[in-house]
Image (cartoon, rainbow, N blue to C red):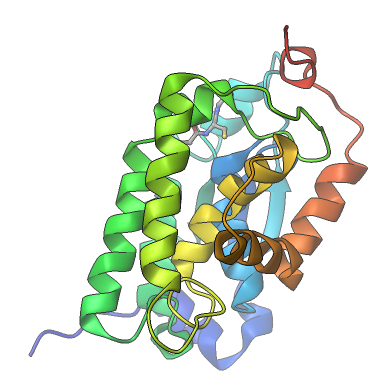
Length: 237
Ligand SMILES: N[C@@H](CCC(=O)N[C@@H](CS)C(=O)NCC(=O)O)C(=O)O
């Protein structure tokens, strides 16, 4: 049977979380939807880490990110000698390194579905992402409803509905909070910013994700940020 090797750096950390020394490099909390995903996952699962923030769209943004990853994007996870870039790779690495925390659903079929949903989020929904960008704290009610964004909202609603309608009334998409909920947290932020009206079951899910302590912590920090990117702060008519 194949077993996954634990990164020696992280296995040492498992014995003493204070030695963990994991570093997560992120962008502005207000705007960086990709950064939000692993940050919320790590916070929700009590995985200790140091946060390094690089402000986006600044003259030194690229050079600062390049200190950590040549991919030129945040988030980046630094675990000793190991660098993991890209939000999905980071979440997978964490799930492997902290198996006892069940970052993915325990059931194999549910895990496959959860992974598929994250992959679809990761590679898709371009219309939603461009017409309804994340801006926590801003309110753009009714804006951004292009045909493509509407279709994306429809597809996301369909996936959420399928998960939440499973017998036993799920609090989160697969019962307990998992990576997939962290993955959709930025969508939840968008639904609040753009006041997307949803069926009661889906609105309930939005409210629960927005009220999760890890999400609340990110939202409060995002709202406290004073740096603004003008092109993301005003929605043109
Ligand atoms: N697919 C990547 C996307 C990462 C991404 O696009 N990050 C943006 C911020 S949300 C970024 O680093 N932009 C660099 C820049 O603005 O210079 C992931 O999942 O991590």
